[in-house]
Structure formats: structure tokens, C-alpha cells
Image 1 (cartoon, rainbow, N blue to C red):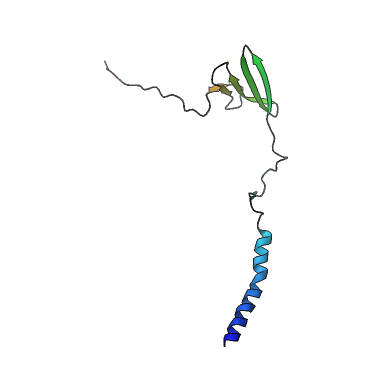
Image 2: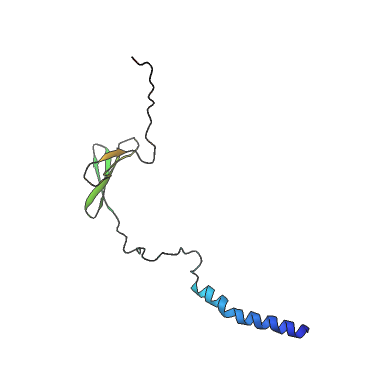
Length: 113
């Protein structure tokens, strides 16, 4: 009886080896991230072109994608940089101070007439 049980276990282990090998072959290599179908490859991603110039001590960086200016970063001398961003693509730039939330000014009604 003991010999029959051990031979049955050995047969089951041998039968399951191809299934384990197939799982390992289809798995991505360790440390890599899976890429979804239809995602652009590294050669297909377009990088913005950046033009850097100085004017009166300010550093001005103009960011263009496909020839269209979409963002300007201005770094004044001794100051924090700020951005001018074209949100809608119409050529109208609005100031954006970066990841800082805009200051909320409190409004209270003191007296009504």
C-alpha cells in the first residue's frame, strides 16, 4: 500500500511539471512592468522641444510640442519660478505657480444696509 501511494504521488508531480513550466515561460522577467496592448513604445512618444533664453536676468524656458507653444517657465533672479500655461490651446496664457494651491481670500459680510 505504501509503495502504491508513493508511486501515485510521484506520477501526479510528474504530470504537473509541464503546467508549471508554461507559467514560468509566459511570466515577464522579474523587475519589468507589463505593457498594455496598444500602448506607445519608447520610440513613439514625442518629447517636447525646449528653448532657453535669458532676458534682464530672467531665465525663460519655452516648451513646444509639435511646434506649438504650450507652456513658459520664468525664473526671476533670486526668486521662485512661475509658469504661464495655455490651458485651452488658444494662445491665451494664464499664470500658474506650480503645485502650490491658489490662495483663498476670505470674504465676510460685516454689515448689510
